Length: 194
Image 1: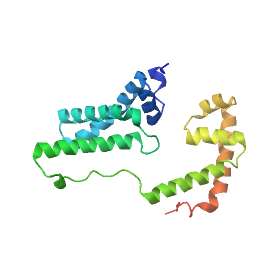
Image 2: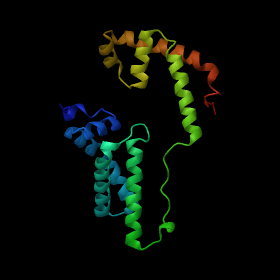
Image 3: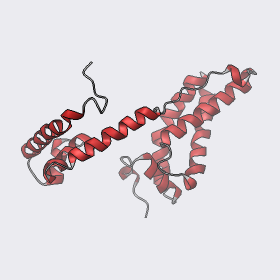
Image 4: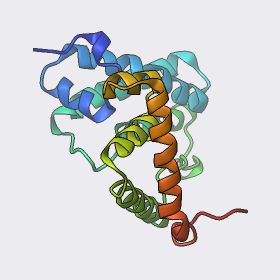
């Protein structure tokens, strides 16, 4: 049974795409509402024409819907793929409208991280996970909910069935323990004070 629309707004893009591919119309609505402003803005910045930007945005979202059944999770972020499609569609439209050679149009900037940045991000994530695993379970839960999942202290208190003050204490002790566990790795993880 499809999930109601109002419960889908916090679902990650890839998960929504899978839900849509499995016939969830609410997921399609959520994806459309989430992405339309972004892809329209990108297309408008490239094209400078509202009607053309609307056409490009619509075509990009149609292509996203068509690719949903064969989407391979983990290969690319949905937004990265979608921005690339918008850039390509807008570039094609510019080339046709102006009769400009493709080589004369600037290549859209690649927003993907470099290999070294990706490797550093993975090393940081691995170090953080290892440090988190040294914390007592309740501290770890509070720190993850607060600083990784982004929940507020009242929400965490409700999830953990404890007081807000207890959440504050757990997260403070957990952060101190993490800082201590990671202190010797600053240089290796690419963190500098300058």
